[in-house]
Amino acid sequence: MSIHNIEIKAHCNNPDAIRDILQKHGADFIGTDHQVDIYFQVPQGRLKLRRGTIEQKLIFYQRNNQKGPKSSDIHLVPATHPQKMQALLENALGTKVTVDKQREIYFIDNVKFHIDEVKELGSFMEIEAIDEDRTVGEEKLQQQCQKYMALFNIQEEDLVAESYSDLLLKR
Image (cartoon, rainbow, N blue to C red; front, side):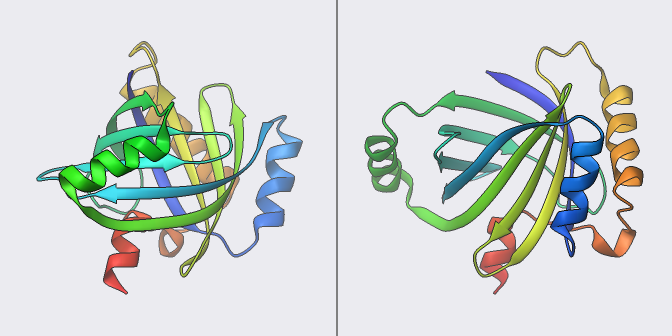
């Protein structure tokens, strides 16, 4: 499966306030997922195996590191045998870094929200305006992302350009 999205990542100093806003706007709470993302050595983009209690997928994506809304093309494959898949990929490519997090997952229509507590990094939130079948369009995805950034009062200084993997590697 291939999807397109516009997303942001921001430091989150008050997860309770984000939860309250999501609840007031009728967000569907999917659950809290303990996710371990194993990133592998690849020549371009990012390849990770997500091992979670809700989401288990092999994910490849390319995205520029920039603050604010950024465009991503993401390729997803269900990880039905995650331990075997991890062993194969570690042997073939080598592990780059592992990200361990608790993730709360919410949805409003095609927009996905994460409240993350990432080991060694702290609290973050993400907004992902998702176009699964390329019918929503880039302009609407941008508008949705901007709308929720304003709703959550996300400031420029809160925005994070890098992925969690990059932040961990910089430590």
